[in-house]
Amino acid sequence: MTMTMARAARLAIAIALAAALPLAACTKAPEKAAAPVAPAPLALKTTLLEVMRASVEIPADGIWAAQSAEKLEDADWLLVEQDALDLANGATLMTLPATGKDDAMRQANADYAGWAADIQKTALELRDAAKAKDVMKLGAAADHITETCQACHDKYRPQVPSDGVARYPFYPARERKK
Ligand code: HEC
Image (cartoon, rainbow, N blue to C red):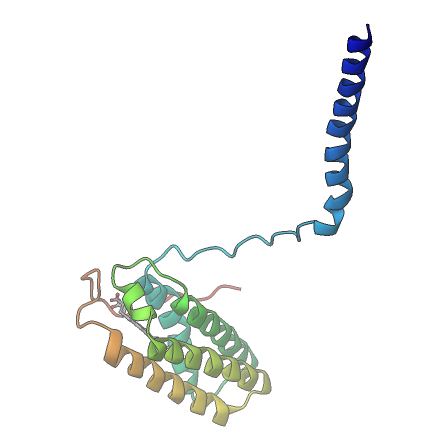
């Protein structure tokens, strides 16, 4: 009888302890509450060549067309602004790990990153010039963009496109619809 009571008491203590431990852990938890994890940005799923053709060349062509236009109407300035934004974003895409076989090798270089950053910076200056309808600044930005494309191409663009398909412009022009 005595043995049983002693055992029962030990058991009661054990149960109480077992219950108390997780409780203690629970009361501490809020102090260490994990900060909410932000969703990761989407990875780039295309090659650098595809970025060049679709997201860099198209807005750059629009900018150069505006540069050589005799007169720019309000709608033309809005298109310069749009092309400037597309090109600034295209510059960001140039730096995201791309899927072409030689892309990582190119993107690992500081001069490559520097030229991409230069395109982004100049495109944003061009956005401001478009808002101000400043023809001089449009010309200067467009010229600087040309030089920067060329600098990076001189070093990193192969003679033949990496998919072997040479066609310029790669995508046909289209009339923009309202
Ligand atoms: C930071 C480096 C870099 C900059 C800046 C850059 N490019 Fe490129 N570009 C490349 C590389 C690398 C390739 C070759 C891609 C391949 O063949 O895999 C390329 C290829 C191209 C192609 C060839 C596409 C084809 O079908 O053969 C065009 C067009 C192009 N770039 C346009 C531009 C324009 C326009 C600019 C400036 C607004 C520019 N690029 C700025 C790195 C750059």
